[in-house]
Structures are given as C-alpha cells and as structure tokens.
Length: 407
Image 1 (tube, rainbow, N blue to C red):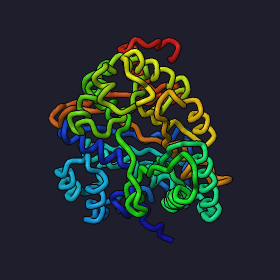
Image 2 (cartoon, rainbow, N blue to C red):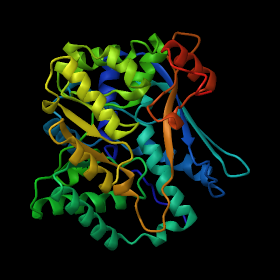
Image 3 (cartoon, one colour):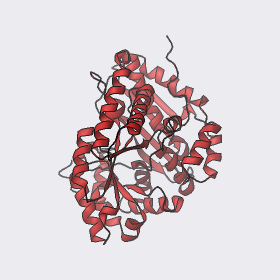
C-alpha cells in the first residue's frame, strides 16, 4: 500500500525557518551551504525506508504556499517585510538538492546542498517526514492512541498553567505524526481557555497549526545562523555579526537571541551593552538550565540592566517537571518562558522518539567560490558537539577552549 504524502502544507514548518530565511536573503543572498542528517542513536531503519523517503521528498515539489497562508503570516508576523512574501509565492522545492542513501544494514544518510535561502526550508520538513515515516514503516503508528494522548496533553497543560509557566509547542521536528502535534495543540489551546491559573499557553512554532487554531506562531532563529557566519568569518565574532545582521533585518523585533552555538564564554564577550538592551532576551538550549540562568543574570547585572525585565526562553529537552522546577527557580530573576518539543509531540507510552537532527556543516559566501569552509557547533552539552572532529578541534583552539579534555 502506498504511503500518503506526509507534508502537504507549505507552512507545516517552524516559524524560525521563515524568519531566518528572510534574514539570510537580506544579508547573505548568495551564500551556499551543506547540511547533514545525524541520528544520534544510530538507528537501523526498515528496508526500503530510503526509497520511500526519496519519494516523500520528491512530493514536496508540489507543495506551494497558499494565499490563505500568506494572509495569515502577514497579519500575525508583522515583523516580516512584505517583499519576503513575493519570494515565498515563487518558491519551489527541488528534490535534486537532497541526496538520500540507505546501506545494507539499514543506516540512513541524508545530505542537502544549495543556496542557503532555498535549502533552509528542508530541515524541519525532512526531520518530520523521517520521524513519522519511521513509525509508519515499523508498524508502531498503529499503537498511537490519540484520544488518550489528548487527555495526557490536557493534564500537562493543566500543571504548567497552574504552575505559572508561559509555554509553547516546539515539537514539529521529531513529532510522532502531524496528527500527534495537532492533537497536542488542540488540547493545549482548549485547556488554556478553560483552566484558571497564572500560566498560559502562548502558541506553537508550527505556522500551519497556528493558522488552523488561530494561535500565535512562535520562533526566531536557530544555531545554523551563527554556524554559517562562523564558517565564513570565524567563530570569535560570529555571535556579534549574527546579532548585527538580525537587528538590521528586524529593527528590534524578534529580539530573542540563541546564544549557545559556541558556548556562554565567547557569547558573553560579544554581548555588549547595546545588544543586551536591544534584544528582549536570550534562549537557553543546552547545558544546565539553572547554571545558565545564573550566568545570564550575572551578565545583565554587570551591564547595569535589571535581569528581571528580560525574557529567558528555556528549550533544552524539557518536560513538565523540569519546566516547573525552572519556573520556581527563575522567580524574580527573569521573565521565564518555555518551548517544549518532543515531550509534547512524541511522548506516547511504549514509543521511543528518534534522536535526530540536521546540522549545517559547510558554507561559502557566494556560489562563485571554488571551495566550502567547514563549520561546527559547540553547545554547552559536550556530547552534542556536531561537525568534523578536526573542525571541532580547530574551532575550540580559536576560542581558547581546552581541546585536550574534549578530544
């Protein structure tokens, strides 16, 4: 039996891919990139998975943005300039950007290459396809009880709202299915409307679901922005250059910066008083959440800025229990909020979520260059360093980090 097309809506994607694409065109319109799929658990995929994945990627070529989707984004995402919607109207996926292989043992290889402004829209969709397709082809999708999952999601939302948490759904990339994410979003919204409490469900990163359920789409940027800039110009000032480019495009809007691409130390050196005042806050996506918050609070105070006026978004593999602990710890220190992903959209009993990511690994500033410059990511979680080992070593040396303890 032929598997139905998994992605059928152009905006079935996270907002940060749209906002980053706009900034890329505005600042780096000719830049070329290479991405690589990484399965941290080294999963063996079912026989024929690679072939079906190729077919699903080919089907993306018939996915185009609709007038309804554009109208929704224009109304809800007023920070995006109107010229960008002309680009989206003419955008077409091309399966030739993507190379998929599956070896005899079942291991999957996925790479894509091309103009940054084009390939930037592949990451979230391909991860969502891989995740949903895996459960379909292993037969595990038959065990997904969506009625019970709705009830579980209501319970999660109730606890977060009662605990005073402002939270959003960040779960597109590793969802069990689109239906699973939609079940969650529906439950969170309905609980938000009927549950009293100091907390609130603020929206979803998924633009299509935000449109369907009349919610606010949530998102700003990802590590790839800083990684690409580091590949072109070096990691020492990549955060500074990224903040400058972002502020030139959005003029103070979308002012939450994801700081941990190369760790707190180098970011802190780049985070001067002007940018600390301009950006509304920071996002914590790796390391110990409590230690990272203490560093953020200390930095703001050193710049004579009251940290309790600044937003800190926590998105580092959260579940409800962890979010509630952080909420209690953050009282009086900052304005905390939470982006929760897999725990919302792939938390079915007996189902193990895939541990999959796509990372940008090479970049060249223009298509006319005869070579790429490699890049990497050095988060606060040492086990999540991504990139060629030699590139990681070179970047750590450039940042005066101790390679000996990492190598």
